[in-house]
Image (cartoon, rainbow, N blue to C red; front, side, top):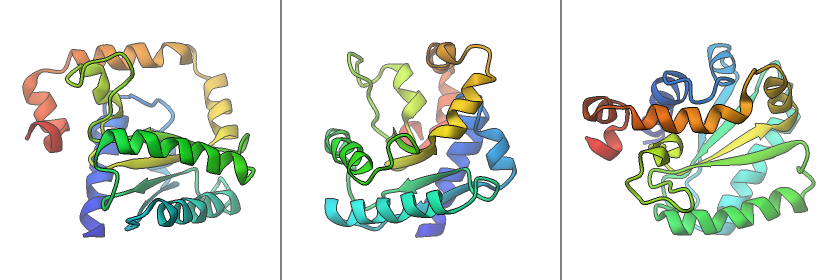
Length: 181
């Protein structure tokens, strides 16, 4: 089962995140095999926070030349976006309490992702819709360096939303089979 989950995340990463250039900073670490994709089979918040802690420590302890970022897939819980979104408060508190603030941050992706003040079927939500609930652990220093050298980092979200809105039904079905297949 883990192999299929990892394959699903890799496909999404390659076809959507990198393929549509949603994150202009993702292609290089992926090409250099510095993206870790792992699966948590936690079924309680405490167990998932323990798995998150292990991944935070692993990323922090591994040189950036070997590992840039980690995607933690969560197949056994948080399928409901509202529950997932509530759990993100615990994640933020965890990062703060254990002193990761300023070093690591966690970004969120979910099959039902919905930005505030949008309708569930708003195409812009596709920018953060992944095949599984994910916690994406990012090195803040790497992100800051990448943004420094990117001409219009502030325009990325608007550009990504426009890209999603421009997708035709066939392209949506191909890129998001878990949503439109």
